[in-house]
Amino acid sequence: MNNQLTKSDIEKMEKEIEHRKVVVRPELLEHVKEARAQGDLSENFEYYAAKKEKNKNESRIRYLERMIKTATVIDDSSKDDEVGVNNTVKVWVEEDKVEETYRIVTTVRGNSLEGLISNESPLGKALLGKKVGDKVTVEVNPGYSYDVVIREIDKSTDDSEDELRSF
Image (cartoon, rainbow, N blue to C red; front, top):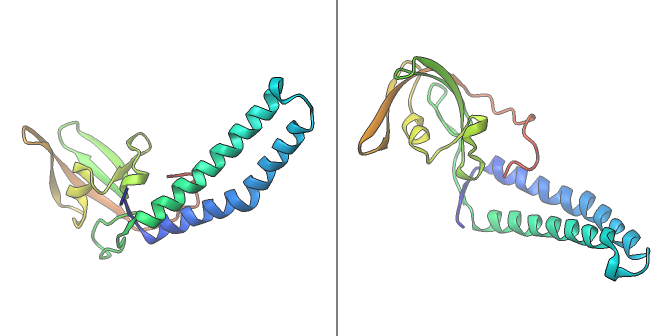
């Protein structure tokens, strides 16, 4: 795996693991017990559904633990006037004549449909380290590139709106 994660990414993953072990696991085990107590397991849909949910939770815990164990920790700090990981950036896309807002995140959190772009994506790479007012050329591939102008950088890292399961 060896994904790049920030310290805050790892902290979120550890919180999710703790939540799943302390809160979710006991609830799911109770569901399995209740379903098992209903008798004949060969035709007990509730039992199989409860077991499936329990197994999904355990798989998620293992996945997160493996991600943390194999991760490369990257620094998400940047200068006050430069774009860095976990910053929100407003850019003017010259080609489309539109302003767009993105948040630069690590590769495992990237979700372009929600405005979360990876620090390894062409746009993410191009924006890192740049300042407000800079005109940046984003090279998508050797035959196509486009220009954006950085209009605003928001350094606040309030992730309170992020769900636990953001990985």
